[in-house]
Structure formats: structure tokens, C-alpha cells
Length: 463
Image (cartoon, rainbow, N blue to C red; front, side, top):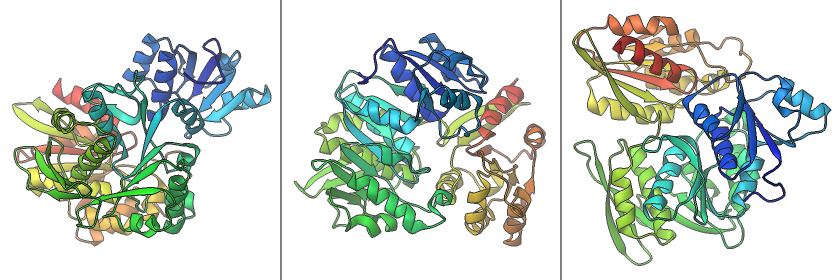
């Protein structure tokens, strides 16, 4: 139970519909708090929270915070938000989401998963394995587990498993007992003065905040992880494909929509054969590290094996569905990836399933700063896609950067031999309907508004 505040206190969440905020709200409601929230958008998950007792308003007028004693604010909310202005004027306590998450973690043996890529899937896999072992963990994840259709839950056990966000440095507010680092890549560099070294230092500081009896599980295959390893002052356990790792991973060829791999525990020379239904080499790493942390926490291999096989994935992480219209069947793949490394991993899977001429890719770039910083990487990667349509850049509260636009990216792609065109959201349906009969799949790629469009087009075209 959250300490320092009683069930009779009122808590209000500004931006409650955000992926991280929903999890916080769900746990507070299940703990018995009087919770309200505001968000400009509605969603199925918010409707579920309303059924649990959340009072929701779809605007940011300060109506619901007038009797609140604590305000939790999403990092996506600007300082000129009307609710925040009212709270500050009336001296209501306002804290960021990360601070509340840190407070919720205190009574638990906590595991935090951090990294530029793979956090959500890895956190979800760990939570599923712990549930399979009847440990009933509490978890807060940045995406919905497809089998549970939820991103958070209040368990009855001693563990809490959370996703730690490096994008705005908020992971430094967390004090877990165990940390998993999946990788460190050149993403969210705008927050770190466009310097990879500062991002690496942020991860190092996060790790060294561990208690003296904590430990960190590191991906030894990642070059930036290797750069900080020697400066870590806590217990380190390594995993990767090279022999010197504490846990060596051996990947096998995939077949029939499943992947097999082996984990070798060097400490006791135990060799474990495992299988996952998730696709892509990146998901082999995610499944492997989830298995390794479970082994370290004493979970039996049979629980790990069953959980990996049963795990169906996370919403918007290579999420497959299909539509049928005019006697045509098309696969729809919805994917959240918005960094070249993530998109490359997705395309690797797509290209293993379809010929390049057999799918259309719609990509919504995310943030002007990321598009500028990684323009060359985006252009080289996307020039290999045969049927490519680029949407407007999703700003994510950023101001426009002069000279950076979707058209700029398209020019760079086509200069490298690509075949990219600009498209508006309201044109997507017609492009799909009028597409060549050789098209078998549609890839909807990005972290902004494209997910809502995916759901809409499935409904519109299917009907």
C-alpha cells in the first residue's frame, strides 16, 4: 500500500490516458484510492478504469482537482496546462508520474527494465513468466499485453515489475532492486544535448543508484552497454551471444512462426532449450533476458518454458490482424517502432514473410528532433522499401524545426533509390482499396496517430 497517504485522500492524474499513466491509475484504484483523471482523448482502457471507479473528464479545466490533495502529471503535459496552473496557484502538491511510480515500488522487490528498444516486450514477458509461476506480480508496462488486454495490474505477491523510461531522464527517480538493460541506442538524444555520451552516463547513474545488494543484468552484445560496464559499482550479470557472458545465448533457425534458442548458465553449466512464438531476432533477445532474470530469481524452467510459448505479444509490437474486402484478404501489421533500429527489426520480419512487392508500408515519423538527428539512417533503411508512403511528422509537443519535414525525408529516401510518396491520413483507405492484387500485407509503422488510423481502417474497409 502507498505510504504517506490514506485511501480517503483524493488523487488526480493529468494526462491519465497516456500509456504509463493508465497503469498508475489502475493500481491506485485497485488499492482503494479516490482517483480522478483528465485527458483530451478517450480509449477502451479509460472506459475500463471508469468501471473501476475513475472519474474522468475529457478536457483540462480544473473542475476535478479542486478537492484533490495530490496531482500526478504526465511528462506529455505542458507547463501552461490549466489544471497545473490552478494546482500551483492553490498550492496543491504536483508530482511527475515517475515519482509516483517510485513510491508505489517501495513495498515490493522491484525489477525495472530499461533500454532504448525492447523495454515493453521484455517487461511483459517477465510479468507473464512470474504469473505462470504463481508469484502474482504487480506490473506497470508501456503497452497492453494482448492476452490480458491491460498494461498494469496489482498482484498479491512480493514483486513489482516496471518499465523504466530514459527518454526524459525520469528513470533516475526510480529505486529498483534489480535492473535489466536491454540496449542503449541513439534515441531521445534531444534530451541529452544530442550527445550519446550523456545518454550513456544517464544509464550508468541509473544503475549505480541500485542498493548495495541489488544487481543489474546487462546485454553484453550492445556496444554502448560495454562502454559503461567497467564503471558500474554494483553486481553485474551479463548475457549475450559470446562465450564469456555469464549467460550465453545461442539462437537457432526459426520455422513455422516460432523461434528456438538455448540459454547456457556458465555458473552451473546448465543448458536450457526454450521456444517463443514471437518473431524477429530482437524478440529472441527479449525472450532470453526475461528467461534469465527469472532463472536468477529462482523460477523453475518449466514455468519459464510454458510462459514463453503462451505469450502472444504486446499491443502494437508486430501486432498482426487481417481484413477481407471484395474477396481479398490483407494482413495488417501494426507496429510502434519509430527509431531506425526498431523499424529495421520489423522490416526484417516482414521481409521474411512477404516479397518486397507484396506489402505497402505507411510510416508516421515521430518528432522533428529524431527525424533531423537520424535522417541519414532513416533514408538508407527506408530506401529499401518498394511501396512506401510517408505521413506528416508527429510532433509529440515539439516545435517545428525549420527545413525538417516529411517531404525532406522523402527527398532523402528517393535520392538513395527509394520509392517514397507523401500521403495524408484520409488518403490511406483509397490507396489500400485500389492497391495491386499482388499486395498481401499493410504495415502501419509509427508511435503517433497511426495506431488510431489502423483501428479505423480495419473497421471501415472490413465493413
